[in-house]
Amino acid sequence: MEAESADRALLERKVRRAFQVLVLQRGRNPGVKGWEMKRHLGRDYRKIIEVLSEDVSPMGLEVFEVKGADGADDSSRFLLRFREPPTISEAETSGIRIDDLAVLAASIAFINSKQSRVARREVEQFLREKFPKWRVDYSLDRYVKRGYLELDDREMIHIGWRTHAEVDEKTLMTLILSRAQEAAKK
Amino acid sequence: MSVGQTRLDDYLRVIELCRDVETSSANPFDVDIREKILILKQRLPELKILDELLVDAEAMLELAQIVKLQDQWLKSRASSLYIDPLLIQLKLKLLPKEALSEAFVKSWHPVAQVDQLSPRGLEKAFVYWRDLVPVSERFKDQFGTYGTRPGVVDYAELVSLGVFTKEQFETSLSELFDELLQKSNGEWVDYREFIGDSHFETKVRRAYLLAFLISEGRALLKTEPLTGRIWTMAVAERAKGQPKSIAISITGEN
Image (cartoon, rainbow over all chains, first blue to last red):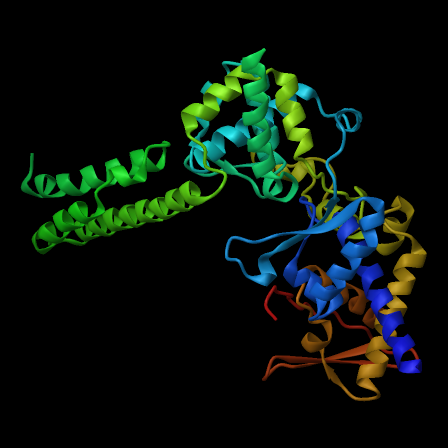
C-alpha cells in the first residue's frame, strides 16, 4: 500500500515536471527534444507524456510529437498544443492578421502540391497574384523565421517543422479544395 | 579550348543539369541517372590530375542529390497530401483571402507555451554582457585608444546591477558546497569530474561557483603538474593562508 502511494507520488511529480518542461520556452523554438525529456523524466518518459496528455485533455490541450528527420526518439520534438483548432475570432485576438494566415495557407498548399519543395521565387510569383509584394516578402520572411516554412541554402522553400507540429495539413488541403468548389459554384 | 577542358565538358554539363533541377521544382526524374553515370564511367580513365578527379566526385555527389530528390518526389506523390499542382493553383486563385485563412484556422492547433525570461536566458545575457568588448576597444583599430580600459565586474556589482539576487547566488553556492562536502568527505575529488555536466553552460556555471567557494576558503584546490590532474575538496572550516591564482580552461568536452 505504502509502495503504491510512493509510486503514485513519484508519477505525479514526474507528470508535473513534464508539464513545466513543456510549457516553459527554453530556446528560440518551442517544444522539447526527446533526449531532453529523457534527461528530465527518465527512460520511461513516453509513459509520463501519455499520462500528461490525458491530464491536460480537459483543458483542451494535448502533447504532440513531431518526429525528427532521422526518425529517432531522441530527435523527436514534443509540444503542448491545442487539441481542437481555435475559432476565427480567437485566432484574431492572438494578434495575427487574416491576410497573414491566408499567405501561410496558400504557401503550404502550394509547396505541398510541388512535392514539398519550391524555389522561393516561384512561391513569391504565385502569391503576388493574390497579395501585394510587400506582404508576400514580409510574410515569407516571418514564417521562415518562426519555423512554419524552411528556406535552404539553395533558396528552396520547404514545409517547416512548426507546420508539421501545428497544422493538420491533410485537413487544410481538403478544406481548400472543398471551399474552392463552393466559391466556384457561387 | 584545351584537351583537358573538352574532357571536363561532359562533367560540367552533368553538374549544371543537376543543379538546375535542384534549384527548381522540375521533375527530378527528368535526369537520366543511368545514362549520366555511364558517361562518367566512360570518361573516368581519361582523368589524370587531382582537380579533374574532384570534378568527377562533384558530379557523382550532384547525381546522388538527384537520387535523393527522386526518393522524396516518389514519397510525396504517394502521400495523401499530393494534389495536382495545377489544380491546387487554380483552387487557390479562386478562393478569397477570408476563406483561405478560415481553412488554415480550422486545421490549426497552436502551440501552448509561456514566453518568459528564464534564469538561463538571464545567465546567457549576463555572459554576453560580461564578454562584450567595450566600444572603445571594439573600434580601436579605426579610431585609436580612448576611454576606460576593460575591467572586471565583480559579484557585488552584479548584485547592485540586479543581474541576480544575493539570495539566488547564495542558495546555488550552498547547494554546490553541500554537494562537494558530501562527495569529498575529507578526501580529494577530481575537479573536472566534479564540475562535469553534459551541458556546457551548467559545467561553466559549476566551475564559476566552485571558484567562489575556493576564493572564500570553503574549498581547496591542488594541481598535479605532471599528470595535469586537478583535485578539489570541501573544508568544514574556512582555510587560511596565502591565496594563489590558478587558471583552468573549461572546454565543452566531457
